[in-house]
Length: 130
Image (cartoon, rainbow, N blue to C red):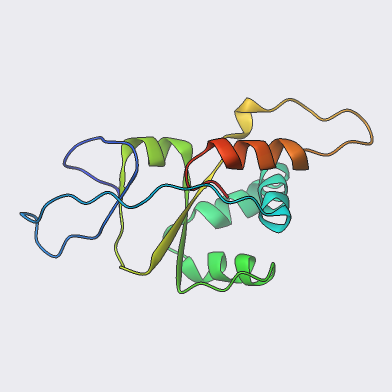
């Protein structure tokens, strides 16, 4: 589902009606939100949540996690940075693709601190970052 097999180019690519259609890259952007940054922190702290978000065969679970945080989308998809870097082809024109920043870039927060600001920073530097 979604993974590009033709050429490994970084980014999100528009759904093609025909294999011979021209490749069209979808706009990459960053959006900072305290609510979504907390979702990133929660995913880093909970492997079951992380796996739920990254399960491309259970879009309803992603919709529910986002809806619980006030974000209501028809076709949300969450990718790893590796999936983004390999290239992802949208399957629906209204698909909204997020990239979960790689937690390996973080260090443990000191006692009494959270990774919220770290998550916001990584969201800003990761195209399509949630």
